[in-house]
Amino acid sequence: MHGQGGAGVFVNRKPAALAIVSGYPPPYGGVTVEVQRLRPLLERRGVDYIIYNAVSASQDGGRVVSVCRWRGLWTLRYLLAGREPAIYLMTDRLIVWLLGAFAASWRGKRVLVQLRNAFLADWIARSPVRRILAGFALRRVTHVVCVSRLLMSCAVSIGVEARRVHWSPAFLPPDLAPEGRTSVAPEVWAFVESHRPVIAANGKVYWYEGQDLYGLDHLVDLAARLKPDYPDIGIVVCFWEHAPADEPYLNKLRRKAAAQGVEGNLLFNTRKGSFVPVLEAADLFVRPTNTDGDAVSIREALYLGVPAVASDAVERPNGTILFRTRDVDDFEAKVRAGLKSAPGRDGRVRGGLTAEDGARIEAYISLLAAAAGGAGSSPRAGREF
Image (cartoon, rainbow, N blue to C red; front, side, top):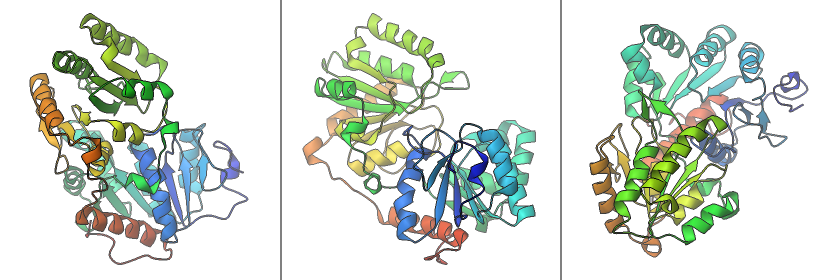
């Protein structure tokens, strides 16, 4: 019944009130972590839900069903024939938005779409065809959830009614779904224990406008610049996605690190595992991206009391130490400042959930509950984000 993309997903089971079409750990990164932490909040609210995992084979035989094997065909079939009355599409795929618009307009489904990266802004600026198609789709779904205010303004600019556009960064407290040390590769802990200070980063091999999106190249430069003053410096980069095709670039970076004498100060951890335990063990978190959505890992770091240094490529949360995007000199300067200001692991104030965060999360869950028509739905959903 819960096979990977099989027909049994549609039959022999009672439809839930809310379907979440997304991903689920492993891998641990971005949307998959958000969905994992969303579960207990929905359950406390009494929302009957099912998660269709289109990213990996992970499933639990109950509320998480893997559909990744034939996800394209499955998505088409589901949005044309799926039985859940409310559908939350946590994806950046334009074709899925268009299918969601069909499900809302012609099948009477309550469809929500989450915008979580820079794609829509890029389409508006550079691709008239995608801009038109995105506008067509998003104007017809029930609600649009945006992880940044930039994406909110983008959605409104293409004709989505402001009352149906909601701001909610994807951060949910990590305590909702605790991630233990055993979910991290042993070699990571060996590296962390043998280096001081430890800087954590995450990402994958990816390119944006011909540049290393996650700034992996600048992390090698950073290690070389810091080592004279911090001979035991360690930079651990946890990859939330990795493929064999990435190895040539990583090998190039490893050779560069060796040439600069910092091969032992840098660890590219390409094994799947949780990031939060590594983040908790670090002295500083860095996010040298050249574009972004609303990076959950920055909010996690701030919540855990770990100083966060990030590029100014997009809006960042209050408390982030900003540096000029792709400026390695400014990156180094801000990292040095962050290391000097780091409170030490024993002096951290953990669990800093602001009143704004609390209200935002409450409104987010209320919006989903109202869409599902389940217990605990509340008129607070909507513009209180």
